[in-house]
Length: 566
Image (cartoon, rainbow, N blue to C red):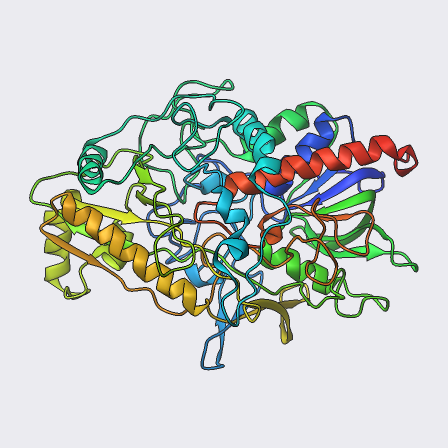
């Protein structure tokens, strides 16, 4: 659906309003609508696909927005303020990597992601119990475990469509169902790395991907073009919420999608009860506003914007923001630190066929002595030329002049990279706040991001870089190098943690169902909930939690028919 539908009538009353049409919001809104409820889904971006505004080039895309990107937010939406460790504030524009942006479009990141669909390791849910709590950290266990989430992982895999190995992956306990599609093909890179891993005693697997390896759900199979991370799929073979869940729910007539519409604040009545959402939008001539009412509001705008909206919705009863009596809204901002190693080979080893990531090991997610946590390590998606120049050139190679051009031309197909997402140890000083002076184009305070990753995260990343370099060396690389991890602001990749779920209002923002403490009908359904963010790409966990939240809401509405208003 490349053209946005007409803006809905905001005067009608809804069973639920969901803010954000990404991995979490797209699932919750669709499940509620398919369950018979009237749902309004708010998205600040547009409908995009490969042919209609979603594809640009290797300099302007969501993976590497060096000169702009192909999704949103718009360039005039307003900056974010990053505070570096020296206390200096930096205005960060929307069209930059440092903005830490979730894609603003229907589907959000699921339109332009690589689609690695990992389940978390069982010990990812019990980090504090396994490792203890490092000093100056806020490391904690999840209030639920793998067993509680397993059926929702299965539902996410089946409903969206995941390709991968049959049976449990090496880090998984028994699963309740196999993946619905077989794995994607493997190429020379996978053969070389598998042979080396066997020699090192490392187990490997093919990564599960939200990609059609065969025709599925009425859409094409992947043609292996490589336009994966950062781009919509040109053949619609990548499975996001926009072409699976949302499409089905809209066909029911019970899901209305309002695009290019901003959730300005969550509205409460005089008693503090959530009644709906204040909305703003603009057209070519003017600005508009409306209040939409609902029995339930679900916040799924990403860890930065979900926290920001709770803070923007402060009231006399909750002057520090909705659900923020504990002071935890916006704290524990985290993402994933990615140690990356490169190996240069004598022969051409890189097929440059998509999706690109074909082999992984989960052996290092836990159990490496002397560190907290670990990482899944894998080869990477198809490398854009600009990423080769920016990240893959050896440290001793100049970035300008003829030398880097010659190196890239000679070695683009002779390079293999191995990387992976490291457990970030939550730091309570990594946080989202409202800036007191800088506003967006709507006059609202922008997000102020501060804090650096915990020192234990850096130690773990350094250890994982060593494992990646050892793997490449064993594979026969004649030269191996990597970029040592450095302290930095978190949330560049896979933002999470700012509305953590827990067991009590004193230690969390929501309960185990994502319900904001102190509010019967206000929920969060995105990675904001994650107390820790795992050693894996988190999107399948976001979706699983969203399916679980939707099930809770459907049961709640059935148990409380008084909550449904005609």
